[in-house]
Image (cartoon, rainbow, N blue to C red; front, side):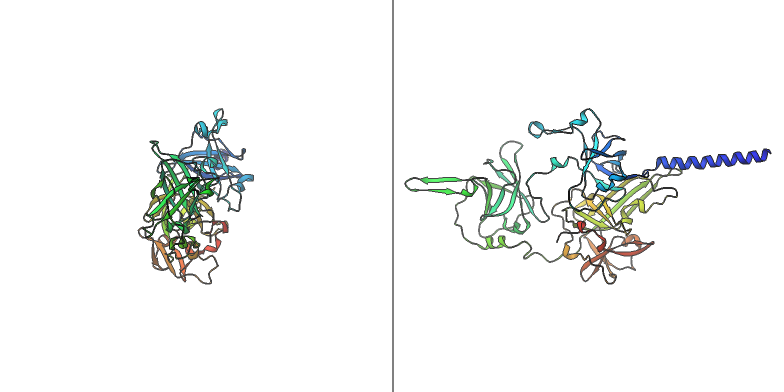
Length: 485
């Protein structure tokens, strides 16, 4: 009888232990049922705390689960849980920021004043338009300022290849942000900012010139602020210059012959106090500036490849935490939203597909994605999309990518399903971009993310399928994430 009681007690104790462990795992589960997790990176979390609300257009749609530091200590990592019914609001184009009191001076106003009497919270907004959904446990780079503070109204967004330069003037002469930059009467760009220099000695004017006309700007170009000017006398005749600037002053320019050397981004030029005296005549320069963008451009340079470095840590309750570090290749291009992105295998940059947990989803507590760009350096990136059909494909968005970064063009990419697999691969060398290889000469880790090329066009990237290397065609990429034509 005592033995039976002993066995019953032992079985009860074992069952209680198993039940307690399962409950502990459920309570510690980072991704409980009914919630959609997202990790956000901020340079400053601005007093945000666990339990803070997540709002969309002022409506609570989730909460902050956890706040920590990135592996390098440079960023705060905020884990938020969106309620399941609101998860579809989180798209690749969504913008996340922390709402806290912000003061813009006497003219800038103030925002986030509701957090003077309550805690800071996370807000996000998804612009209108078609955009893929964020993947489960995406790592997103948050905005440091609300969208309305970061966007200058009525100013065209700079595109890849546009020229950005600065003009110095003694006076503003009524010039406003958004005013045109004109060459022989044709608008070729716009004024982006107008600010007084720190020492108040002059006015700094930042302009942008469209890519098709940047060759018209050389070190011999002359600039002036066009505004109506009356000269002469009643008896001798009166001349009115730049009458077209009566309603809105603009920046005028001309380039003298010989042409001179084209300028680069960041070039600084001085604005003349008056319109130069020159004859209006059709010159070779005017004809070149009026040609559509793309004529006479350089030949294709091949896919722009980068090295992707991924680090992650998974919490393990029974032993030391698991550490992960992987390196591979990614391909750089600009999507239709104007963002600099990298396409790479999901198995290279998503620990949830790499770690395995017997009882629940892997508890990934730290992630860091770095992209090594040849000739530029190391840039931080966030994972914004993974293939919902399970193919080994993901898209990363680069943070603070230089505007003149060389990227893969749409002409170098093929989105049709290839008839056969490509047998030529290009992988990142970490130095000068791409080096050729083949499917048999490289290990899986070495060729993960390498691009597959057929007929000079990239048709896919090398990922993983059932533990073996496989070419994932680019046709799986959504239209909204493809390069603009």
